[in-house]
Image (cartoon, rainbow, N blue to C red; front, side, top):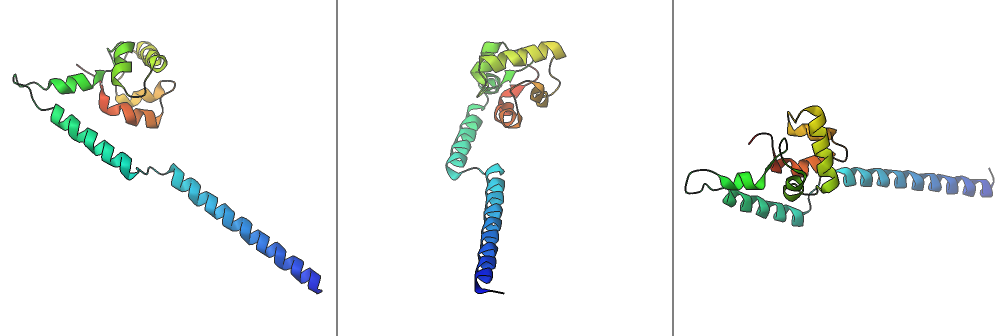
Length: 136
């Protein structure tokens, strides 16, 4: 084998290895980006919101928990305005879609049924789930 052929073979091998490393790196990066990782700054914010909501839900003088009723919405009876007001990330269009689905299906049997509403996916559902209830 000539020296030029050896050099060409080695160069091709190095290029193939480089492509392999890039493919592995891209796969690892894609897997990491799709993981449910909460950055520490968001975790601290989520904990403080959770603590605030816990303190808000203390019982009032008459023994009822009025804060829970104010921070949640009955998805089976709420108006579009109420849905927009209480559910984070839900605007007029999605609120109307929720109401249209609710009317067509005869109401929601579970909060998970919101996945059937156009424009609501897993991430949106998990964001609004704590604010949804099915009964008054």
